[in-house]
Length: 152
Image (tube, rainbow, N blue to C red; front, side, top):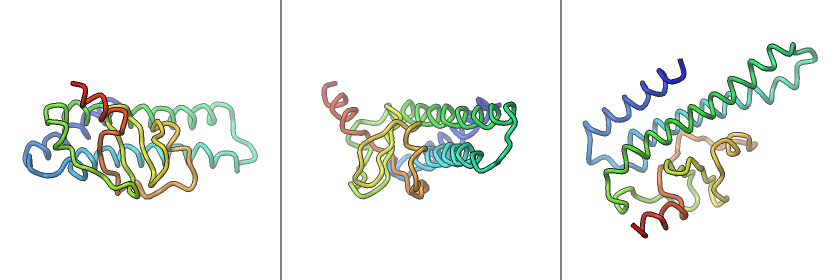
């Protein structure tokens, strides 16, 4: 079921990007798709954290909640990688920029940077509290990936 959902989100983002090729990639369809996947992972991790408040959580339920959170993080990484694959055809300089005070995601290494904070793997980012509003996520190459692109 997860792959079907990822494929659907990726398909919609690609169709929107194909229909509007001049729309910026920073906040374009792939940015929205990655923001959606990141929101899902954040919500699942918050549910995992909230289970501590329950006095009695059965082991099976705990495993189910943990499994859902881990699947959400994997699904987020898959959407980011689909974005990177789609954006590979564009020259590096056309990906745009995101200011240092904005939320940014690098689809190539699946890391996220909160305003002015270090780049973190998406799996660690979703565990930060309080979480920022990820709807404003912009896609850019992180400094490490940008350096690799420049070498090519």
